[in-house]
Amino acid sequence: MDERPVKLACRSVWKVFGGGAAGLFAGGGQPDDAALGAGNFIAAVRDVSLEVLQGEIFIIMGLSGSGKSTLVRCMTRLIEPTAGAVLFDGSDLLKASASELTNLRRHKMGMVFQHFALLPHRTVLGNVGFPLEVQGLSKPAREAKALEAIELVGLAGREAYYPAELSGGQQQRVGIARSLVVEPDVWFLDEPFSALDPLIRREMQDEFLRLQAVLHKTIVFITHDFEEAIRLADRIAIMKDGRIVQIGTSEDLVLNPASPYVEEFTRGIPRTKVLTAAAIARPAGKGPFAGTVPAEAKISTLVSEVLSARANAVFEVKDSNGRAVGQLSAKDIVAVLSTEAEAP
Image (cartoon, rainbow, N blue to C red):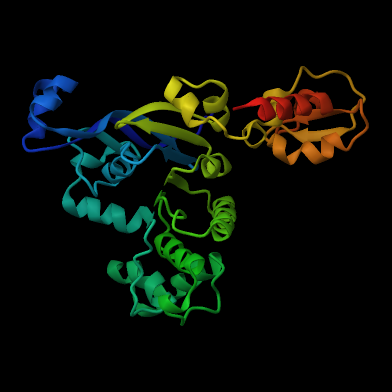
């Protein structure tokens, strides 16, 4: 069981568009479909409750129009929720004053969106340091911090470049550095890599994972790409028609879908990229073992090692603390590959 504290939480959050929408919640009740339809209201987010743990990558997925971007904007109050509560370190953001909210956004939140929104007349250094300028830091102080962030994202030496002189991937790195320079507690990313070419996108995912290994941020990340999600996420929330239909690890979603919609959503995802050694391990025996494999390792990363061993070789599966959690063999790997090959 994950014992990390809750950093960010939604409690029955709604966002309903339409005049007089707040009246739907008078007396503490919640509207049904009939009430929404009668008033021509549009419920973009419906009764969403979730918790994001300290230091985790929490990914929100869904088809276009599912409400995922609206939900993230409700979390930051870029869009005002119609009802519910958004808790940041236990305090309800919906009760924060305008000045308190501004202070939180400047010092506690980082945001990266699909469109980089870089200032074309400013250099890389000027773009990255801009949030610190807004905070009122002196020029030497903000440039020193900006240079640290620029180096962190691998753009050292390009401080004097303008956005038009950078590739798409480099521009996205500037956007990431700009969001990180304020050292946010929570980092919000809305499809940050979807506009990039596949190769650059993969490189940015690698960069993202490297940064997280260094910074250990609490991250809320939107994507519509399930393979990107399983690569990056600690947990995934799937949305449909404004509601959360399931929250879990990628293994949970693939092995135990909560509804036909989730099952269809995850159909065709290579199981070797989702399942871990622990998920397919059999009870541990006494050995001898041909070697050990990490419990959290994806099967796709183990295929070559296990299948290249002798035919009857057995590998011990150990968790991050070195405890044996089971064993697996080439036959176990082949069983997963066979199931994947048979999938429609």
